[in-house]
Image (cartoon, rainbow over the protein chains, first blue to last red):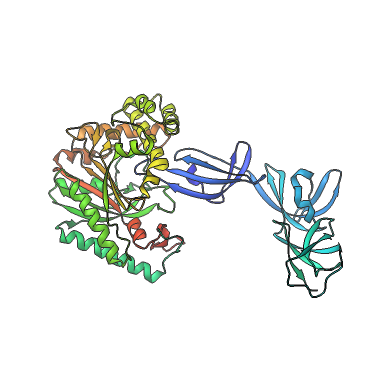
Length: 186
Length: 333
């Protein structure tokens, strides 16, 4: 495609990887050539790089697609997800899911990124609610200090929570940082 | 420059455009220039390497009113100005829009200085008229193109180097850009290759060296362009390796471009041909040559002309950085 089609959020194929344009600036000095200055994010690894195209040049659009899928189970083939619309099931290898496996609750709905029809990444909801399955006893009334303790959630993952949290509590977690956000009163 | 103030409210946009348009007209009337309005749809535009017109069958939308205004000068208009709607395809960004307003004016006499004085006065008048608080550029400097090149990137150039000589004189970062351009034009005729090499150099140098340098200066007139970048300007009679072209910058933003106008139709035809050759190398369509313009060009009186981007000037006066923050474009169209 002609570089004049470049915009913020355009998907670009570069060196065999899909990138999304996260920052875009068109500049054109005097009567010179137009420059399309882009900050690109690798849609699989998250790595960011700068790239400038000149007017008249071409770029390859990346064949990427995001599908809503539901997490079903894990076995020796990896993590299996089901397409919410077609019910098609795909297994994602451990290294594609990576650290996000800590937050893969049964039935959780995620966005699975396909590149050239191959699954290459998972995006969790930014916040999820999980149940504390194991922690030291709660300290009553201690809601003011910043002290924390370790607690285990239903996936077996450990997080840091405030001292007042008890087993069986539901807590909201930011999946991007892995941090405790708040207790959910039920 | 103030950061991220956001777009003006609609009543404020209407007010600032009203004030700016009145200030421009008031200034030129005081100066004795006559206002003209030339057709927006034209049979041909000035042939430029990287300015592409938008088709409007059976013609093109004007990319500048330059050719039409010169023909009026040939026919005895005397000094004239115009606030023109112009169109340039695929120029979309914070500081670019496919449709914008050029204030273009011509004075008789082969001298750029009165035009640069006009730019300074016009900028001040528009800033004051729009109520811009204290941002009127107080100091303007005159900077010679090749001296700024030497000061910023170390390259010592005369202005008439061929692609090989230019390449040898540049630091590696710039030489890479120019050799990329040179590689694509190996089969082009020498004049087009020289134009392409210098244009590639100018583009890369502006981006890497000149724009950062400009940030430290309020108002700058860049003068004495190298001859290959003359566009529609004469070359300096005493120093033919330089062109009588100027570019005006305020707060790091280019706002105007002016020439002592070329009146030699054969030289103008050769330059248009070289540009079309460059366009061919880049895979851009050749542009039609305006034969009516070339036929009348020898009758052009000695004159100098300059075009100023009004949308950019109003953006600066409003202390904004994006044209969209002050534009009267209604969206949805």
